[in-house]
Structure formats: structure tokens, C-alpha cells
Length: 320
Ligand SMILES: [Zn+2]
Ligand SMILES: [Zn+2]
Image 1 (cartoon, rainbow, N blue to C red):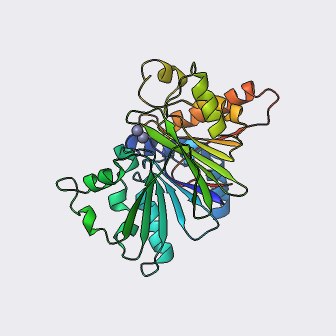
Image 2 (image 1 turned 90 degrees about the vertical axis):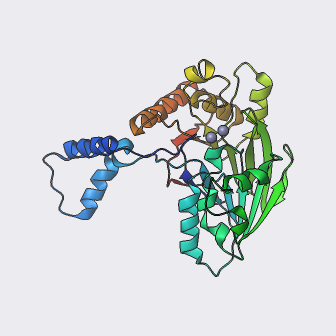
Image 3 (image 1 turned 60 degrees about the horizontal axis):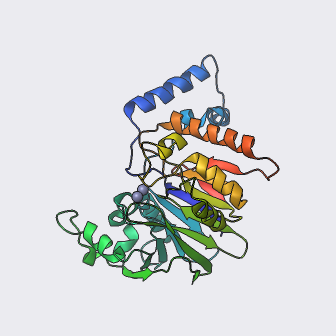
């Protein structure tokens, strides 16, 4: 495995940036630039880069979709939220139409935010493409068919021209798929969800979203510490604060940044990516959450090796 590309990082519902958000960013940037002049584009680019992320960028609004780039020719994708639309477009731009590709889609669960990009994932309409949809829910195929059925969508699933197959995986068992060992794990979430551990010879990536953890459940914590063990990257559902996850939003099926740090430390993981961002959190709030999480990691590190913490945003590429 070489890279992980985040195409959609927002939780529960795609969320657009607003007019007010953009004005606030422009206002902050102009204020910071007050009195300066830029003679070359490179100077301007360097200035923009030095601005806080919440000013020069955005976490983005597409729902869950993450690509794992391997050394092989086949494509690995976790969930097909609305991030699957730009992902599909990038594949068509790169490979063109008369150049069949194989896509492996790993589905955490059947909630809409994780499936709703599939009708807009162009590769499914191209004859010759092979799409293998892996998951652990017995209703996997029906969920894909249902969302493209009238009156919900104008193009029926049967009109998708690619070869689409379904692969029902067994949780807890390693499956060898096109050069990778992939192990699904059952997670606590309404209607169940599954995390996936991807292993190549030298790298490990864990995709674990829509997963609630109870801090008083030692068996759960040790099970996940094992699942995340020494991962190069853990993509983790950090939708809520610990206070929310433990009180008003308990049983809603999500987790927090604090639990993410604790599990990754117990697992001796190398890097944690906060993921499945709460739609009501804007770029400032998400940046603040990242800073807080980094502080927490430092305070609780002890003798351990540092855990690198990032917050996923649409368009982020992580080199493993
Ligand atoms: Zn979700
Ligand atoms: Zn869900």
C-alpha cells in the first residue's frame, strides 16, 4: 500500500460550505495580508500556505469515501458516500472509458451517507469494468438496488453497465484480495457496522468508522487495540466530543477523538486520522478539535512513541 486518499470525510450528511463561511475566510486572509505586497505568485502561495488551515482551506462536505492506493492495478475503496463522485471522475479522467478497471468497494454499513455516492460513481455505468462490493451485511445487494429504484432515482440499478458482484465477508477472518489481507470486524452501531484492517507486506491501514466504544467495556477496548495493532494509519470515527459521546449522544453509534487517542496508544499505532466529521462543526471548530487532540496525545504519551494525529479533509493524500 502506498497512499490513502480521502474523497469524503463528513459524517451523516454531505455538508456544503456556506456563503458566510467563505466571507469569513476572505476577511481573515485580507486582514492577515494587510499592508503586504506580493511580487511573485510563489510569494503569494507561500503566504496562503502559512495561513491557518481554517482560513486557507476547508475540511469539505462529501460523505465517507476513502481510497487506498496499492502497488497493484486494482482499486480499493472504503465506502461510497458522495466522495465517490469525484473519485469516479478522477478514475475516468485517468483511465478513459475503453480501459476496463477492477474496483473493490468495502462497505462499512448500509446507512445512506455511506452508499449515496454509488449512483454518481461513473465507473458503474461503463461496460467492461468489474465492481466487487465487499461487506458483511446480508442485505448488502438489496441496499444497493433499492436506492436506485424508482421513485428514488431515475436510472435503475439494472442499467449499470459494469459487471457488479457482491462478496459477503466473514468478520474476524482475513480474506486475501488482490494482494492485500483484509479482515473485517463487527462494530457497535445501529444496524451493525464493520471496520476493515488492510495489510500488505509492509503496511497496515485500518478503516473504522461509525463505531461506538464504551470506555467501561474492557473487552471492547482490548479487541480494538488488537484490531488497530501497529497500524500505519487508523481512520477513526471522531464525530463527537467525549462529553457528547458519553452523555446525550450515547447509543447514537459514534465515537470521539479522546477514545481514538486512547485506542491508538494502546495499539501502538503510528498515525490517527480523525474522520466522519459532525456536520454542524465548521472549519474553525474542526481545527480546534485537532489541536485539542494533539495536546491530549502529548499529555498522555508517557514513555510511548509519539502518535501522529491528523484530521482528514476532502482531497487529503496521506503517504504511508
Ligand atoms: Zn455515517
Ligand atoms: Zn451509520
